[in-house]
Length: 191
Image (tube, rainbow, N blue to C red; front, side):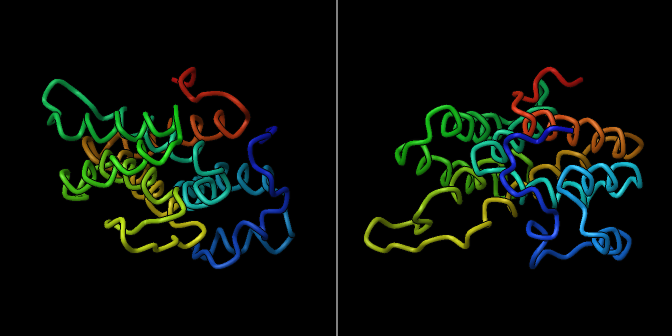
């Protein structure tokens, strides 16, 4: 695994302050590389921990793109237009990460009531900026990895909504997409 988009080569550095299951935490005792740790999480089928790890390891744009891909996976002809719009606006920020595009993602997330993967993909884009205040007069800088929490929400909701028998299959697909993105791909080629 060549994770060219992830700057931190040491898994422990990424995991500082994160909560993992006991089994995932034990894997850190040998001070693994980022790629080795991610591989071990996959081999042991610790998918939620792998999602948490990868969301924190990826840069903002790549992580938000991953959230968008996962959210898009659940779209169908019955998906409300506001969910589609939330994903489209998050993708617009990924394609062109300017302030005007980022600001549009907050109302889109609010319109979906934060109940769907689409809403959390939009929040990932919004929380990727330097100011998360909903009003222009106040400046509130986000916590450094706040966007990663929204990415985790998007990926986990996308993996667990729908057919319960497909949850592990969804996690596997989404993690392969995330790894493809971390390796310099766009995540779309993974099926």
